[in-house]
Amino acid sequence: MLANHKKAEKENINIVTMIKRIIPMCIAVKPSYFLFNRTVSLLQGIFIGINVVISQKFFDTIYKASCGTETVKKCIWMFAIYLAGILFTDILENMDDYSLQIHIQRILGELNRKINRKSATIDPIEYENPRNLDDINKAANGAVPTVKFLFIVAAIVTRYFSYFIFMSIYLVSLKPMLILCMLFVFMPVFIGQILRSPIFSNLEDDVAPMRREMDAYANAASGKEFYKETRNLGSFRYITDLLTQTIHGFNGAVWRTNKRGAKIDFCCNTLSLIGYGGILYLLVKYLLAGEISVGAFVAVYNSIGMLFSKMEEFISRVIGNISLDFGLVRNFLRFLDMKSDNRPDKEFDKQADITASNVSFRYPNMDRDVVRNLNFTIKKGETVAIVGENGAGKTTLVKLITGLYKPTDGYVKIGDTNVNEVSYRSLFHRVSGVFQKYQRYAVTLKENVMISEMDKTFNQDEVENVLLKNDIDMNNKDIFPDGLRTMLSREFNGVDLSGGQWQRIAIARGFYRDSDIIVLDEPTAAIDPLEESWIYSKFAKMSKDKTAIIVTHRIGSAKIADTIIVMKDGEIAETGSHEQLLSRGGLYADMYHAQALWYD
Picture 1 (cartoon, rainbow, N blue to C red):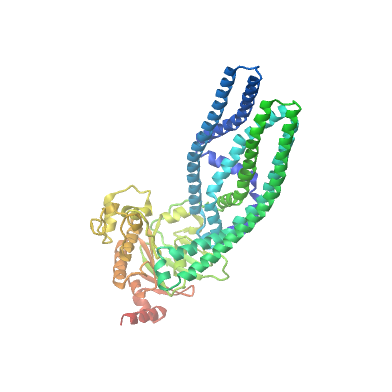
Picture 2 (cartoon, rainbow, N blue to C red):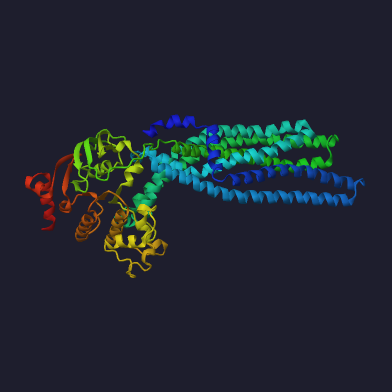
């Protein structure tokens, strides 16, 4: 499994690898924006340093004017230049911030698209593995830190390096000893961040599973689909207790990591403060000895605070952020490195049958097969029902038939083509379905139908026709006040529908998609028997000329099928038509008569 390679991938993605991969990836989004932003940042760093030189000239001029060796007019000119330098630097900073925000949003949108596109190409079975779910969670949380990482590295190269290089040259020109003291300020904090990096890098691996637990418990406690049950059954307190325990564990891990980081920061900042005091001592010494001018003293003294602030910002915040975000960025790249579906696209024969031969399958981290040694053929245009008790393997079998999962042993073929040898895009292009947990999208009625095939050009007659076939009258102003434009969510000032109405919309969505195979996977569990009977009857009519697969635990609904596959404990117990299976008096007949008692 992909997650088993976590350790090797973790070791392979270092800071150099990150820079090589992230910078080209993000620059490609909008090269002109990046070039403009970095040019402004470079000028900003240089002009911060130039302002120090201007301030020296300004204060030297004032001192000479006070001694009578310089004119007041010269002081006014230097003051104007001094203010202009500060104003121009502020303008550059605002331009940098403005262009940065625009660029960040563009890049963040592209990175999220990469996550979504990657998610669509990963083998669906990987979503059954909790470790891979952790990686996906960490990847989603790594998009923003990845953008931060890019601009932190870019700021180091442009703004900070240009400023530090300029100031180093300036200080060396005054007194070489001053630059040595700067190293005493710089090095302790730099070493501290190197020590912090592995601590915070490992934090994300520790808290990702807990973050998923918190999201699940929070949703169970307050989510719309859960709140009735949690209140009525009195389970709200239990759920919140679980949430509180997980939050304590999460916060405890973060607090322990921050505590270790704070100890390192304290020691390193103490050494830096000593270096800062050394610079002040040397400045006073050189001034009293007449080795630097008053203007140089004032300029350097005033700039020491900024220099120290920039150094601290560079090391503690900028380099520190790299340490904090290293694990998140690594997880983002590791997710993009997951193996994708690289199988070729292929067109299938629309008249082909579906054949399963000796098919067995087991889920990740399980020691037994959930379906075993399955053999059957589904004829083109045939309606097949798969029935059985809960846990018999019905839904898993459908996922194998449609190519969503790959068999552990055996094969599934459509015509002469093994479904394991073609891309998911080719497989899913010919398949549509209505599932037990169908989605109630918070969008308009039109979008709720078209979302199954958004690439198709909107045709109002087609959308209305598929809705009318499911007895949905979009012109009923009491239910759909805005027709096809009606928002189907009270949260967004729209309407809410009954379970049966949503069910019909889900079926309309499934049939709107152009497909050769359509699946109905127990979507009627939450509606009444009359509505269920109507749905299956309508499904049978609408699926004419398509290969239809029905999954149900209500035996009476299977009567519309041409062939019925009866599942028990992961194996096929028997197959045949409704009448044939009843006449045999086997498992199907027992289930049918048992369920018939419900209605006596």
